[in-house]
Length: 526
Image 1: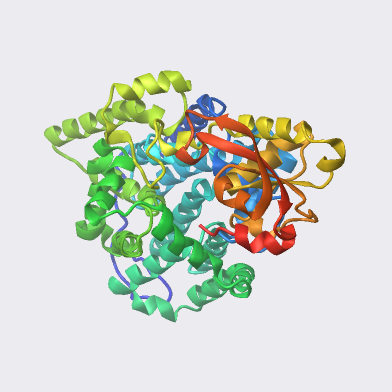
Image 2 (image 1 turned 180 degrees about the vertical axis):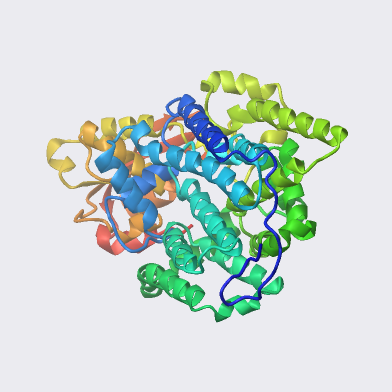
């Protein structure tokens, strides 16, 4: 069979054989695994509270725009959509991430099929992603990280389908998905660059003669343009956020730790699967035309390592390597290698279930604390300098928000009635402000103000500053802008992050200037 891609050299490579191929059975199996993913995620969906960033994204959803200080616009629109369509509960907010995770599980198996894998490869690849700790964590709360792998794996499927003889017009779909993916998270640009660079490095430069790939590129630009213009008008704030985070917040990570955490995030015992996928892309004859996927991974990994990105940034690429690696293991012919394959699959499933409580909050917090005490600190990954607390950072940032809002409400309603009308509630960071905005309506609180990231752009509203409740992070610093301060409460949060464990709440009066004049003093971009 001859595979021809418009704009590229013709080849006469046969499509890989599909061992034990049964499309209907494989599809049912993938659907069952996607359903299992939903069940697993729902098992822990309400055990802990809302995550800090979830509160912020919901606040952004109340201020829809083409961009925000620290993210593109899609996540805010998704938050607006979820709340208006599904409701305001924690399950409603987290439903879309759960569905996105189920889609990634299913699509990983589809990608294995496109690469030539049979039923075993499809099921094995999907199972590997289903039980990967990072993917369980991504899909346990509402953030752009839950949606990002959907865009990457869909684009990978389209690229592979094109090189399997599909219509080159699929580059238009590729461009549409990539463009929307950039509006979700700018790291989609790295993926797109890596795929194109991989094509050039593997002798497919002639593909650039295809008009369809160029039109696809124009579609990407058209979809990205509104956010790009917003960034330009606002002085490229995302670059400032990244730089400040690297300097002031993120832990410094060397190359060995960066690589080691790739294995940890995906389950260390699954390393032979996705590493075999990388080797299959480079060295298997049947994978010759898919070699660009191997280069794409190395370029993606190198870009984030050199750019001091967080270690989870390359994770959306791994469904590609799991799909390829499952094919490599499926090709095992000897009895001994098949036994190794069976043992490996069993080990991945068992270890994945053992690691599950670190990735998905399926256990009550006290039970989880006892569970993690039985294992070494090997499972604790600290990405930020203030994250060295009892719980993993993901969980620590899910505690204390409702209690914080309740405490602020008690302080607010203890004020004289005539003073409350002009009393601003000034939060130290967007999580604290988001907690007021989310829990505040049922408590009778007004919206919070904050100088953190996009909250700064929303301004001090019309408050004069004559009375301000200052609380949370940087409260000790912010209260110095007032001539009269009174400590009204301290909020205990033993399970939370360091900055939230003993948050102080002050009532401040006699500002040194109007709140609008003081506003730049509260700005924090990080």
